[in-house]
Image (cartoon, rainbow, N blue to C red):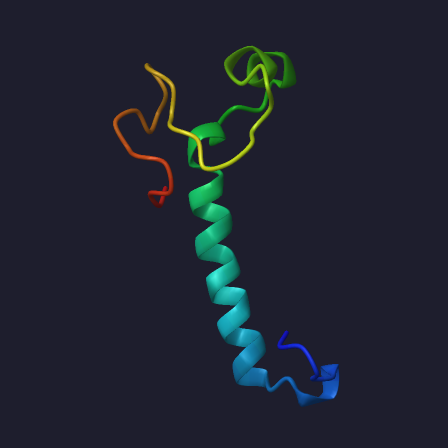
Length: 71
């Protein structure tokens, strides 16, 4: 939301645009961890935690894609 606006000032179009952009960003952010559901495996592959747009590890379903790519 833009500073100085209220919730009432946000249009449906603004909300839809935000939802679509949020989906794109969330998808790209999850690329490196996509399909890893075991918390121990996740901790082993990312010892410092997931701190940004991560590359998929070798042997991962999305191997070869770059950080920030879409899944």
